[in-house]
Length: 113
Image (cartoon, rainbow, N blue to C red):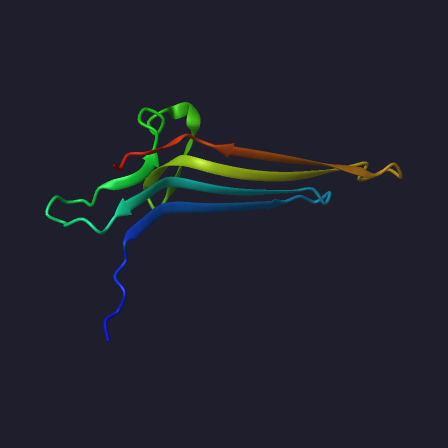
């Protein structure tokens, strides 16, 4: 019985950060970096396999778009989600909270025909 062969390879780095504060506020950040989809159906004569999807040319190298480091490798940001909740009136009777959501998706391009 033959085992199915993969047709694409998805490569990316994933970073999750959580911060909890004494006043009950919190922050959650999820980032995806160096997102690539490679075509595994072509012959591997030319290494590496061709990339089908990746950062838009010129965008991946931009310092303003952000990057993060995992295990000594720098990954250029492809997208991120950050949720923050800030508590108000921690030491008073007038209590409340504010929640922020920030979503960033950087341009990707399909470079396969």
